[in-house]
Image (tube, one colour):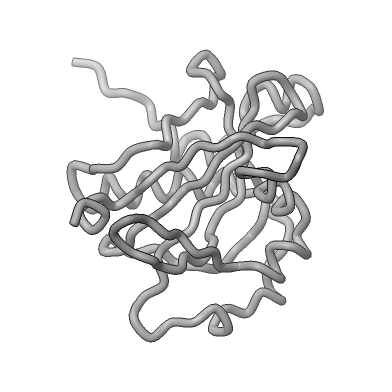
Length: 178
């Protein structure tokens, strides 16, 4: 089945003022909501599965942002590339969420518009619960606001602050020239 072959799925919706579609993603801007709802269900024609959230983050909606990352990737060259993808998502999380993601895991990212700046998105990334795991297995009491977050450049332009240099070096290593 096609869902089993892809390691990462991205779902795009709209933040509708009438509460339809993906407007509930905005509830994850509050840590208390994440602590109450750390797991979501993703239903498709092929499966119904639960996913534990490992990242809640803001992304620029266009590639011109200095810290843009193209997150809707489904296939990866190898395990290292997949784990780099996961690190990109987790490093942008506005919360510290101690949920691991392994090479054999499957990730779903839900995203919709957010209006703190122009062309901004909020996204929630979760990994599929492993066999035997349940929502109650995760101690959400240890979840906290992240100390170091990689926001889109436009976020810093509007609200101040700057990206952590160690995070930038890890996520955007200098390219080797020949």
